[in-house]
Length: 205
Image (cartoon, rainbow, N blue to C red; front, side, top):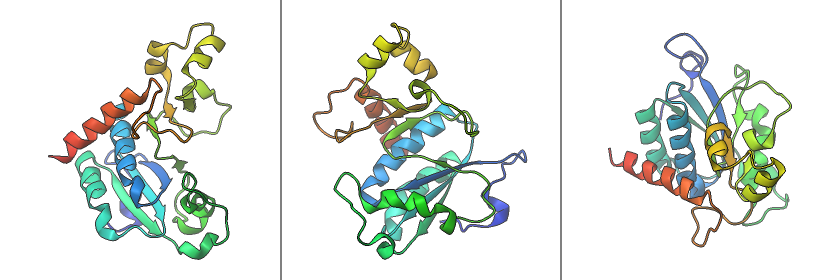
């Protein structure tokens, strides 16, 4: 695992900034993170990224598949471990584990030299286009994969499948039902399965 230094953290070979990504998760979500990284790399192959992963109990050897993937696609992985007692007493559930709170502490645990970072959930597929804080359109920047029919109707038929594939930057698999689970019924599940398959193929090389 590459150690963090100011010199290797955020500068690309052409002198411009690398994309900085923050995620918070537990060990069981590491395969989901790998699918996310696959979608990021395929969508933006010329954009190297630094992945900051805040966690409280992932064994170091569990990171091995993610590290191999990052090395293969030119990303850096920086796990940041925090004390699991930090949010003792906070309400959690199977769907919402304690890791979801860790983003709130990110400024306390990430290097001060980081000027901007994008927080991503592990249950999304991504294409990256920018970082300025703007009024954003959900259909582009946070498309709820459950709501295809609603979005299609609200847009007067504009936001059909072709439009989503061409324009949507972040496809978010919201809710309890997830595309990596059996019985997922929403139409974008096959797209997730596609990236999941590409991730498995990539891990063989």
